[in-house]
Length: 137
Ligand code: ZN
Image 1 (cartoon, protein in one colour):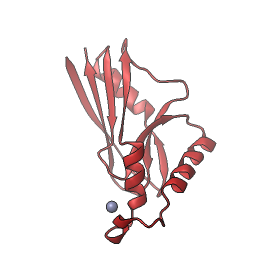
Image 2: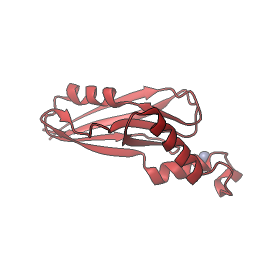
Image 3: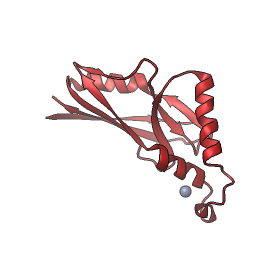
Image 4: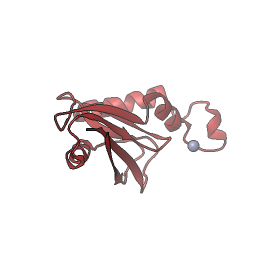
């Protein structure tokens, strides 16, 4: 089995932000030369998440608003006694910091309305990373 790893680095410009990384991830899958296997998209961050969904501005705002209502910044979170970002840790823990996609015949498989996003919830940050690891043959 072969594996190929590459990192996407980016900066975020607001507290909450969805950043579409689909074309970067698909480019890494192409570069990998791997035809069949899996592609892991992993953000090594405790206050961000990875999702797959539609790149439509209304929906992207809906996702941010849902995160804000489920994990309110002014909740009575214990972590806020030592830091001020419990909402983002909780959202990251429940949404998840990674997604896995099938790779078949050299292409990452996703639905038409499934773009891959980093979800920033504790921005702005000058340095966020996404690890893309392609495993297979
Ligand atoms: Zn914290």
